[in-house]
Amino acid sequence: MSKEAKGILDRLESKEADVFLRGAAADVIFECARCGQCCLGGAYTIVDDQDINRIAEGMGLAPENISETFTIPGPDNSPGTRMIKNTGPNNSCTFYDAENKGCTIHESRPAICRTLPMMNVRQGFRLTLYNHCLGASNLINALRAESENLGANRYHERLKSKKKVLKRLKIKLLIHILQRQGAKERSEAVARISGIKLPLDMDNLRKECLAYLLLSIDSKELDGYKYDGIKI
Ligand code: SF4
Ligand code: SF4
Image 1 (cartoon, rainbow, N blue to C red):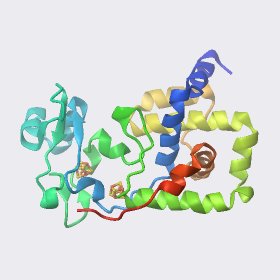
Image 2 (cartoon, protein in one colour):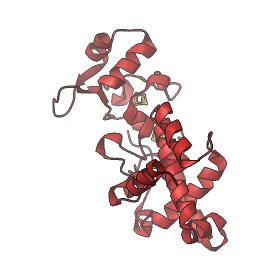
Image 3 (tube, protein in one colour):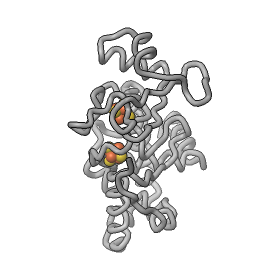
């Protein structure tokens, strides 16, 4: 293994990386059920300059226009951080299309909307299981069903017994997150130095992630989770 690959692995073995990796694994499995809940009822959509520039490009407007028309100062008034206005029906995000239950700027939506509910990029990739998210509830149900049948899960056994398989999974998760963040060159560099083939085999990765979450998640988190339905 190259020195660079070893350096990456060492960082992924740290305690801080654990939460990041669980969030990344949940992100691989998560499927948005398009319930719209995260865009409704006073969504807390923080944006930074990068988000504003991307939205501006997507809408063909100047960043200053986006900032002035669609955002308000962020919670702590810190420079470079603002919040998208909630001017839609039921206090929904100004970019939410209530009729079609979708985001009108989906391609250029802010980073926080790309990563919630599984991760919060600005708070260090916490695994956040949002109680009003139908997709999170589906994920938890899949994990609960899988945990009933663990003995028959060969991915679980492989991850438990073969350190090398677990290490490779961690690198694949790092690559996945870099790709999600649009860091194409970095993701390719990590894959190259670690000898991981791209594109990632997502079907296989999903199965590994399910097993990995069951290895690493506290069962109390699973037991304690309750979906509270849509809240407006
Ligand atoms: S920007 Fe789009 S995805 Fe994000 S809260 Fe608004 S409508 Fe929802
Ligand atoms: S709350 Fe969850 S399932 Fe619903 S639209 Fe948002 S991410 Fe998708």
